[in-house]
Length: 285
Ligand SMILES: [Zn+2]
Figure 1 (cartoon, rainbow, N blue to C red):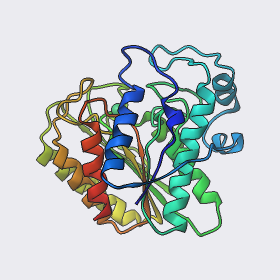
Figure 2: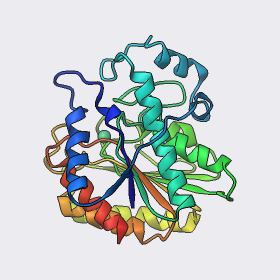
Figure 3: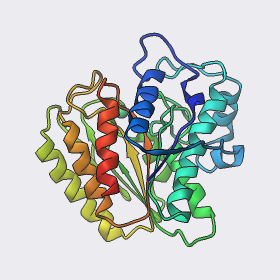
Figure 4: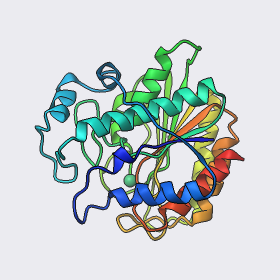
C-alpha cells in the first residue's frame, strides 16, 4: 500500500468549514505513525480534467470566477484541485503498474463535481478523472467499477459515468441528505439509499449485495470513493458506522481481488484518522 499526499492540500481553508485542512493533516500524521509509506503526487494536466469536465468548468475554477456557498473560490484553488486530481491518477496508475494498492489522501474531495458544475466541497471529480485517464493508458483496462461509500450520494460521479457501458457505479448513501439524488438505481448506476441511523450490520449487508453486482460486472480496475462521514460521530451526517466497520468495508473490497485504489472523499469527525486507518488495514488484508 502506498499513500499519495502533499502538504499543499492544506493551503486553503475557511473558518468553520467542516472540510478543513486539519482533517487531512491529522490523518497524514496518524498514518505516518502507523508506518505507511507516502509518495508526493503530481498535478494533472488540463487535458485530464477535460476527460470528465467541460472547458467552461475548468476555466471558471482557473479564473476563480464562480460562486458556491459550500465550495468557495479560494485563492489558488485551481492548483490544489489539479494536484488532488493528479494524486487520484497517480494512485490509479500505481495500483495498475506496481501491482500494489494505493490511497490518495488529498483535498479537495471530488464526487459531487458533475461534468459541468462544482459543488459540495468538490471542484473536479478526482475519481472519475483517474478512471477515465486509466482507461486511456496502455494496459487493457476495459471495465472500471467505482464503489462509493461516502455518506452522500456521488451525484457528480454518477453524472459523469452514467450510460458508459464500461463503467459500473455503486453508491451507498444516507437518504434523504444532500445532494438529494441517488434515490434509485438506473442503467449502470446502482444506488442504495439508506435511512438515517442504519446499523453497521444492515449497512454491510447492503454493501455485500452491491458487491455481488460488481463481481458480476467483472471489472479490470476497482476505484473506491472513500468517505468517512457515515461514521456514528460525524457532525454533518446521520449513519451510525463504527470505526471497525471501515475495516470490514476494506476487507470486502479487497475480497474482490482486483487492482484497487481509493481516494478520500468526506469524513469530518475527529476520529477520521482512525476510520481511514481501519479501512486501509482491511483493504490491505
Ligand atoms: Zn460526504
